Image: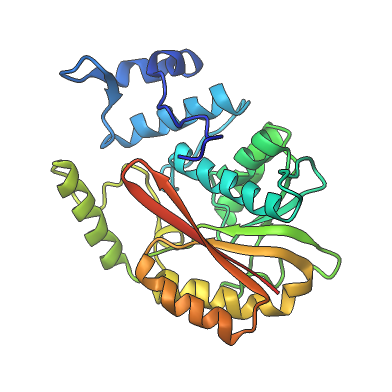
Length: 288
């Protein structure tokens, strides 16, 4: 994990259960006497991530309707810290902090996780957008309950990404996105089944330990189509954004995305790798 990630050395479940006492009944002992939870239990996972937010990020209220994605906090924090390094590259190696740094989170979701982490770690100011009006309402409630400098916008047009969100007066130092990476509901279910099989757990495909529903998990054409459309649309807002970025789940999509960036004459682009345990993730960044 990123060296500034608070969870680089794991976490103390006993301490976390002090933040959320209900978590204690889900703690189990492994044969080596180390503590863990049953990661196939959606409620246990929700409580764990809620405890992480309460203990480490100053959150006072955070709750999600059952159908929405519960994000794994350590991996989400890595994206924030890597973005901070990207901004530091343009700032004499110093990570810019404070509300003067403006960030746009595309598809912020009901969980509002990136604005929470970005504000807690660097005091950045956020706008979050989402196509789901229920997610927007839940995220807005979380922002207000925690007095966060976050404006949550409803993207009413599912065919656009930045339009209707970036106004003529807006400027963002950076945009971020965790796009829906599956191309269909069937593909998402197959991915879930593979995950459970690898974990040696016998569960049905629609039982997700981190939850999630259609707009969060899949879209027509999957992440390649989504990010390609993002690149195409970003050109008209190039003078209003320092860096556009998006997570890329499938590394096989990188050649096509790189080609698309070159076709749209970006000034610069980067692929930034992130490592969380045995998992390799990455984001693509570009600017005009």
